[in-house]
Length: 483
Ligand code: SF4
Ligand code: SF4
Image: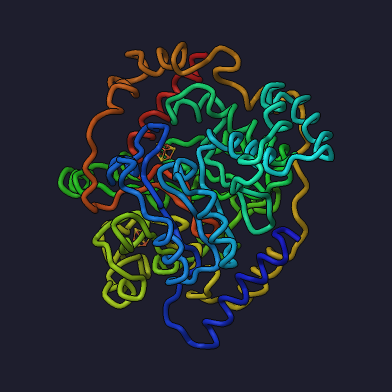
């Protein structure tokens, strides 16, 4: 099976239950943002700027757990910010698992190995030695760390830890191969750390997914290579979604000055071009998301936005109308469902009900539409069934060539602090230095900023001005050409 049976059953039962009850609107995935603080400052990330980044501004544990009960989504995506910074992340994960939720921990990967070492220390017995040997052999832990695990004391044994379970996925943010990813996150070594964390997680027995956003300037051939490499690591699933960012000023330039929208937006046409091969990717790799949503991305059908199915809860409350846009926050999920005028949003028959929605095709608005059958066409149920219950694609064969293509950045001396940064900031690569504006204040004020965040399995962080990432990706392309 492409996805674990128990998970598929849980989600299918939830949909059937609400269909039988004729519930008009209900939650499928809760995007839970316990905090917006992050250890990274990725280019264009608005999430860490739109909300306060103070550690004080956190959703208390009880409120997080209550939000899940309130909306009763079978899946919860814990995102942020970096959720592994949340001081009670272990309690949160365990509490949500006790509620019977399927969890996706959306992380930039930097603290995963630490959390997994905590787990190993808590459960250490001599029977774990073969695994420790393997981890040591692959240099995923050091001798010193292995000793700490072996000598774990009582507090370490009693610590609440994140245990592997079929109900939880690490969901690691990866936006390209080493060169690109490290540039986007503006730190050398992050890609390598993600890969090492993924390898360690697989050895220990965790499920691992990845999430990727496609921007206007994303090179889809690189994304294919990335899937091949991640698949060779036996990653259990991938979410991929178009980025989206609405900016009224850019829209104004399009209408007033007759500029080409393609200069500013990842338009629907461009998204369709980029995702032309999504159905082939779905066959070759374990892509999360319904085949109906994949058809939508490939331009083969229309869907209606069902953003209410993927509500976001954070320090300000229930965010409406969607993960990307903020027109308000509400005190309760049902209150939000009742008070938001949902028919003001989305695109229907090619006409945007809200100009900010015009080019949006993101997961968090449209993937649930595929699962919920909002634009049902004959055969859709069979397609979804076949996709979920069909054979899982085999891992892509690992090879030194593939690894060499993946580690094309700092590992071979092309780190962003050295050649890469110089290359992309050179006059030849464009007037604006890609790194010159990372500390500029960003004001999002609910004007529809965002990146692609997956609806089916949660999201990754980084909502913000996608044009900043596009600038950066354009420079990366130029830099690669001159290599
Ligand atoms: S921006 Fe996208 S997800 Fe949000 S309401 Fe508009 S169409 Fe739906
Ligand atoms: S994109 Fe994610 S990892 Fe990067 S700064 Fe934003 S919240 Fe942190």
